[in-house]
Length: 274
Image 1 (cartoon, helix red, strand yellow):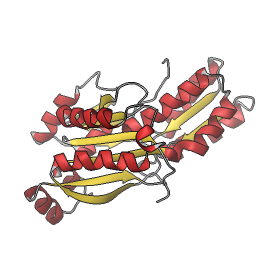
Image 2 (cartoon, one colour; image 1 turned 180 degrees about the vertical axis):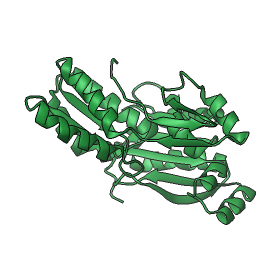
Image 3 (cartoon, helix red, strand yellow; image 1 turned 120 degrees about the horizontal axis):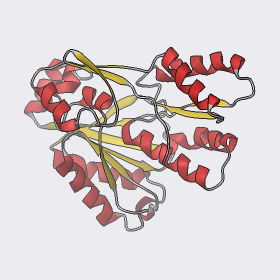
Image 4 (cartoon, helix red, strand yellow; image 1 turned 30 degrees about the horizontal axis):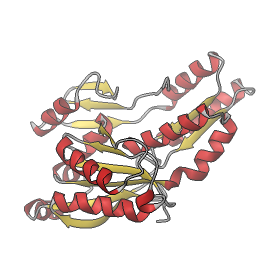
């Protein structure tokens, strides 16, 4: 689509990498190295990096409409806002909009995809900014994991709860709330039930219910077969989808926190209110 992006960073073992959508390190290698014991740590984009990135766009003769990873899981939005405010003094005639997506992973992607569609349809930057701010909480994220190892390691699940969860084959169902935080919602025993439950939640929240007629994204961390089963079930139940369900890999920065075994579902629906 010709949309530029500025990458987060992650450290794997002793080396730092840019999260470049799997070009440098493929997802399979990332999880293999994590499972073998290598630490993976992540870092957000700095204010200085944002200033340099935005300035290049402005100097090329364009205004800036930047969409950030959810402030509920990252401080990148605040850094981008600081960069915007500094550049406003130097480039007072340029428009620099920064949007807190309140989204992550392929939910973030689905939002940008919709924005591109609206821009291509004729929306100017001001209209697009206002539309996004008004509609971004209609984007739903529902995801589960069948392996709690890295949720435990990252402190998102206690060691005791994680041990019991793995022992009983518990797959926690989480979503992103209206403030962009990751919230545990349900405990489901077995990934097959978790897949079915995710589709039920889509039916409950999707715009138009079973008549949903927009795009659906699924992202996964090295568990494509599970993602494919969920996609098949969605395509079977929702007959008016805008194309097939699109399946993507979870990126390295998000994957460093989830580890393998996570399946995430994204669609447009009612506004997130809690």
